Length: 160
Image 1: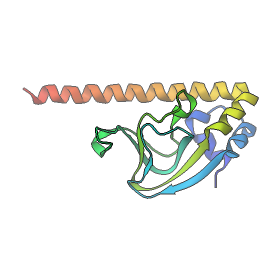
Image 2: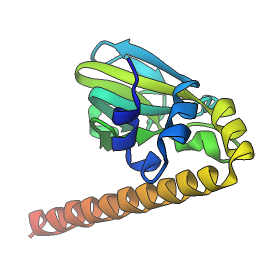
Image 3: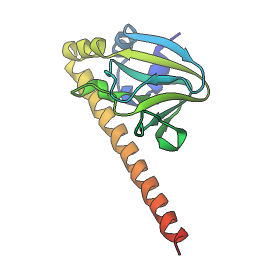
């Protein structure tokens, strides 16, 4: 069951009031997946914003031939983490493939059209969520930069 208390823990919904969170619940659907199940593929229509309720989701870059091995993991999303914000931006295509990783996953799928309707009715809500998404994207990009620099440093040192 999806409740307001859980949604209040989700970073992209921070600052929303209980009525706004209740509105979001109307467009949520719970889903369970086994480990290594592909949730969506890079390039698919981004029809959902996803939230991890339990488990771990890895976002992976598909290599040539459509394979996305664990070595191609760009980001790992844990409880109360959201992903799939491509649903907010044109052309609304997922940029990476999503996989349930390690253990079974319980996820919440939030319908993008429902969210858009809520944002049209309540622009302050749309602004708050969009601002929070920008913060999350910025944080994840910084983490990615740090990891890339660390890997590059190890490659350089390993070559000595």
